[in-house]
Length: 239
Ligand SMILES: [Fe+2]
Image 1 (cartoon, rainbow, N blue to C red):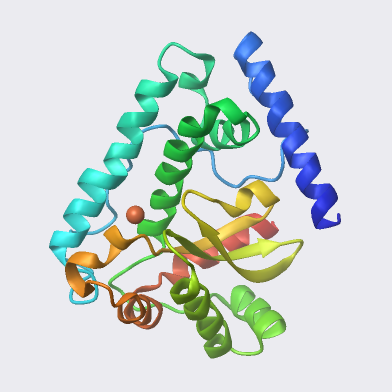
Image 2: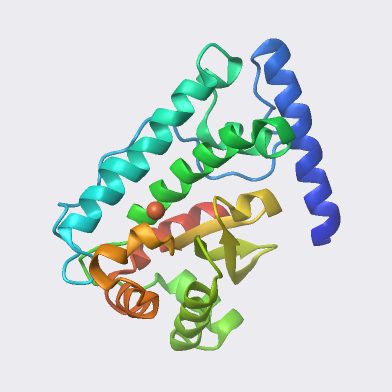
């Protein structure tokens, strides 16, 4: 599907789904929803490693503030915003798609999307070195040429993102692609499946690196990316 028509389709689905939930609390059916590989609860998931596990690239102090203040805060804010509405019992993904299509639900979208983006961010990092699965490695060769070329593209997107935002590896129409979004943006709004993400909001690195975002990104890309998790998501998305 052409990206413009696909975007229109998703916006239509999101709007219809949102109105349906407001009326009946019934989420959009799987048959009409865009392909989603997650159905996340509106609760803060546990950090998948100890707070000091990502040091020295990301200090325990940064992880503590980032996870316990910022990430947890988005869930706290979201819970207040959807309390007493049908969205309170929806998955995080359903709330994101529906709120994105409702101009008066910007705060709901921002907090839901930031909660989701951080869920994937922590999953996208690991203190244990990893490599892509054979299937993902093959797709990387097909779409980027080499793993190093992909890492260079991802680094460029992360360092070059103006202001707060995110750099992503996504599956888009069957192809791998690097993307960047600002603020709480998420490629699922374009119908793409996020495989991994790097947070480039200043709170992700400022305690450790101050304004040196490039140093943080280089460390993350070359020492912390969880290719095992990206491979599992790729397998699910292509199944
Ligand atoms: Fe963050």
